[in-house]
Image (tube, rainbow, N blue to C red; front, side, top):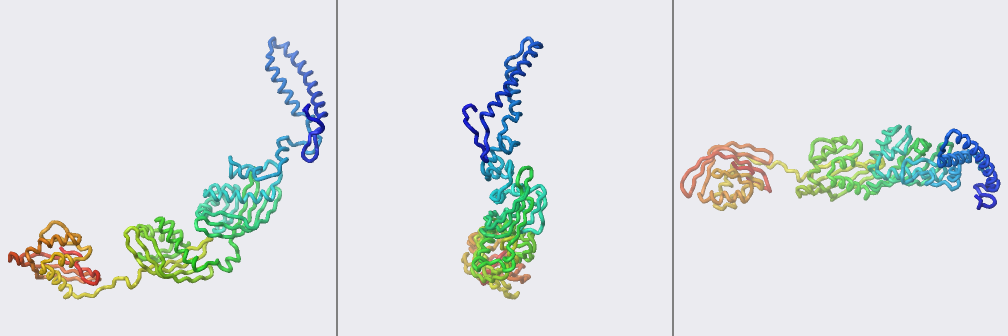
Length: 491
């Protein structure tokens, strides 16, 4: 203090008169030291060996207490009631750091500014704090930005959210879209202990790339020293609802890719999420219509085991008012089997909760590829035995094996080994044909089904190589394959 000259500058042009301050301090210290001497003399009379170091510490402590309580050091300027620490905060221009909005220790629930009203710039910064909470993907952090008794009227839910649990529940779903917002137009009002920010914002959905514009109202209040959202109202742009959500033909076709990408995850929930709340699925390989989330998910539990990936071969698009349609022909490659399946499709999409969803999906196999019943009479079924018998007469095991279907099974008369493929069947007849067998049906019963037939009874073989006759029981099951009747099972 001795080194200070003149007046000590302070905020607002006022200052401290240093010489006067020092004179006042000297007077107070003199009075204090005099009282201290009286105290020591009295203490000495009661204590033969006083602790001088303790006494010195006590003296200094009392002195400091006296000096800190006196008005002698109060500046000759307004704001006499504020401490130097408080004045230090006010001396700098308020910022987001001063608000502790983005402090490293408590990023999302830091205290508000120590003193002074919030500024318009700081009110707008509160949106960024909420937006950063969205970026964490944690609904608990987002919900913590709201007061203990909030009111959230969300964009894509009819249900008001009025407590932590319900706010969190809303963001459990909304955060799956990976939203990030930016304010396009903002209007701020500031009152005593509250502030509002209303305007227009736009969200980019990281999960889909969609952009969604909406109107917002935030009302902020200070709760436990923290600026929080007491009321949040968000709504879609009304003119967009009235005029319809614009979408191009190519964008409609692109919606199939979102569904196809969901198939690639092999997660039935991800696929079911592509359908609207009241979506209806008429699936390719199930007779049961699927009219709710659980039923749609159930269908894809089995279908995804085939690891399907689709490709549109032919597409016809229609765009309406907040709906669109894509119908045509697609083909699936089944990763689990390598097979390719072609089908007809109809997708009807609706704009729901800020994105396009499948309202109706009808899938069917190509009708010309559906196997129809191949007509055959009982006489013709009996004649199929003759084709097999004629193949025996060639003594060529390959010709006999050719009479069996691709997945034919032979349980032969004189071998314990089932023959379930072409080489196995051919191998059996390599030895059997050395007997030069020729057969004749003695009795049999015939059944005709849809693209299959059965002939079961008793036959007898004459072995040309030995002249022996062998009688046995038989069962032939025939299927229509590659344009002709083949033996699917022979016992």
